[in-house]
Length: 205
Image 1 (cartoon, rainbow, N blue to C red):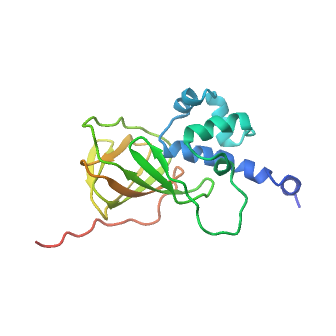
Image 2 (cartoon, rainbow, N blue to C red; image 1 turned 30 degrees about the vertical axis):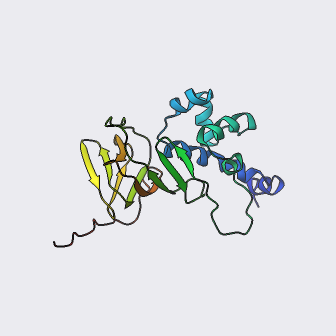
Image 3 (cartoon, rainbow, N blue to C red; image 1 turned 120 degrees about the vertical axis):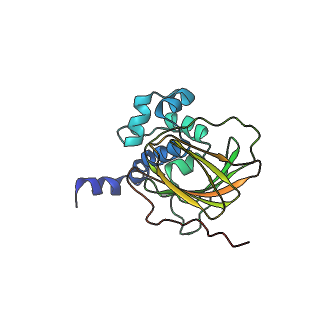
């Protein structure tokens, strides 16, 4: 048995602390925030945030409290609550801007899944496109979604999907004044969804 395993047995919180970095990175990328933007909002330096996400800095309560507040998640979710044997996911919806987001997975790192409801548009102003590391897959459950992706301006209807490298400038918004409901999978760079959804076939009139 190696020294790393002995350390985890002696310190039951070591594994939970190691998982904090991937969780912080996933939350930040889910919100399309850069390290600099998160630094401005929390007062934590970019270098400290980067080391927290990579595991080079041990998370402390002083650092985790402002991050949990900014990401609007409970502190126990950020550090990973101990397993209870209950297989159900007790997700808490999070309100961000004009969207409500419901996390569907708690896996640290890897592919993150969540359901997002974007409420009807109240402005004709287009959001600013953003870039970040990762790969994203979107599936429209209901409504009409507008996807700005590089030079493309696309509208996806119910049953249609899109997948793209998030290093391409992108933004998503309602295509009209009605709400849109979608399923989102977000993975690290190079980790794609292993399936493609075809657009639904239109029925003949």
